[in-house]
Length: 341
Image: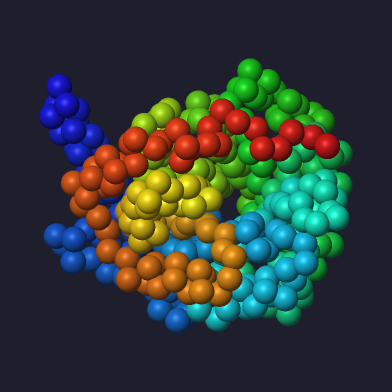
């Protein structure tokens, strides 16, 4: 039975990897045909961001870690500038991103990430595909958040505006998103007024609710939690990625190192294994938050040296993390933020 399952999984992964080439989500077509590599500034590999057609850096900068921490303005600015210098052309943040610090509560810290990114956007905006999010599910709340995001980011337009963290429990109440006073109406208005170019959604918990969003509206992009532990519980890779590819969505991977929990218990796998695993999948790019310049440069170096893994190598990494998958996927069926404030 185990051998039959492994063979079935191997075949599934082989087809999924091959599908990446047909939608422009792989810098290498296949190892057997040679293929080509598309690169941008500083030799950064590029992939197509779904139906947007934008050629996005294979590694992108996430707006958490240092960038969302009050008091780390200087290092945040250094990280962002260095990322752009090294060829990163996509930055992800959210209106809700902000980490509690000494004397500053979680709610008060919200917007820290956007403000730190805005410090650089005021003079390097044209180098970046800029993505942020609304955690409101209503029209009025989302429009207020968009106004605040524009101010924080020091820009007059957002490339990608996303519904933040659509949770599994919302699947029976998605009408709220699509209602006359829902967030989608705000998104469409902002897009019509050219304040926002593309719209999307993000999800951590499970594939069913993301599949329902994909079924109900033609979004442009998804930000989805993907790492080597995914297959061991309600997997996005099997249950959602094929549908996202069929819809030609830009697919942005997150939670690759699971806030470093993938390195727990004496080091399950390395950052290179963690990144290579996800980059082998049909994703447009991956976002990772970093604490310092050393981490940033290490991740970009891994990306530039990336070679797709074989299905057998993917299976071996999945087996490594299996004993620890519950801890690694701590966000599944958990709620980090309320839907509205």
